[in-house]
Length: 368
Image 1 (tube, rainbow, N blue to C red):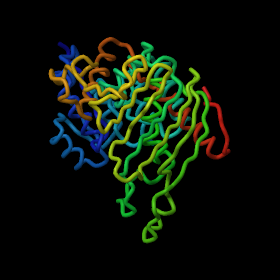
Image 2: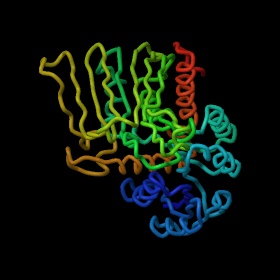
Image 3: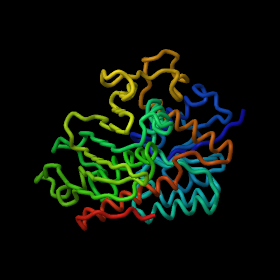
Image 4: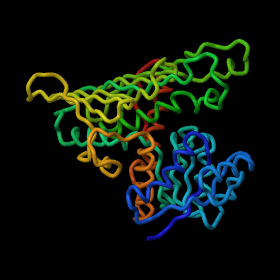
C-alpha cells in the first residue's frame, strides 16, 4: 500500500469537506493509494495553523507557492475562490503535480482554456470538482438513460435553486462581487455539468440573467457591485433533446434544490438532490399507476461501500469521499477520471454562451 502527500488550498466550506474525505476515503474504499494530509494553506498564518490542527494536516502555510513547492506534497486540491485557480494550477502542473480543482475551472473562459490546454500539453492528471454527478441514484439515472430505458430523450426540465442570498440582510462575502462569483459562476456550472453527464453536450441556447437581491441602501459598496442571482435558459442538446435550465440563489425555502425531470419516448424520471436517496421513474409499458419510487440501495453505484441496507441513505459528504476515490485512482493509474479540466472547459463554454445570449437577446451556438 502506497501513500501520497496531499496539499489543500483553502479551508472554508469546501476545504473542510475535502479534508474529511481524505481522512475517510481509504477506510471506505480500501484504496491502493492512501492520502496523507501533508500541508494546508489559507490566507493567514494564524488561520492556517488553526485549520491544520482542526483538519489533521501535518504542516501549514499562508504562502501558496510554498505549498506547491513542498517536496512532501505530491498532489494538490484547490478549494479557493475562482480567481486563484489558474495561477495555482499552472504552477503545480509545471512540477508535474496532479490537481483536483473546485468548480468553476477558472474565473473566465480564457482561464479555463489555458488551464485545460496546459493539463493536456504537460499530461498531468487533473480533475474538476463536480461532486453531484456522483450521487448513487444520479449514476443510476445515467445508466437507465444510456441503456435506452427512457427511449429517445425528448425534453429535460432542471434547476439548481438555493436561498442563501434570499435575505436582503445577507452578510458581505466575496460571492456577491465579481461576474465570476455570481450564480452563473456558482450554481449554474453544477447543473450544466450534470446535464452533460446525463444527456451529452449542449449545442445552442437562449438565456436571461438577472440580479434579484434587494439592494441594501446602507451598504452602497455592495449595491454597486451586485452580481447575478438568478438565470434561466432554453437549450438544444447535440442529441436533439430540448431543455429548460434555471438557477437561483434567492429562492426562499430551497436549500439544495438541484433537480431534474427527463422525459423520453418510453418513460420519464425525476430526481431532487434534497431527497438524494430517492429516484422516481415512470415507464409506459408498465401498469399506468404513475411514478415508481426507487430507494437508493447497494444495487446502485457506490452506495454499498457506505451502507449495506437499502433506504438508509448517503449524504453530501459521501459524494466528496467518492470523488476522492476517483482522484486517487486517477493518480494511481496515471490516467484521468471524468470530469477533467477539459470537461470544466466545456461547462465554461456554455456559461460564456449564456452571457452572450443574454447580452444579444437571441439564441447562440455554444463555441467549441
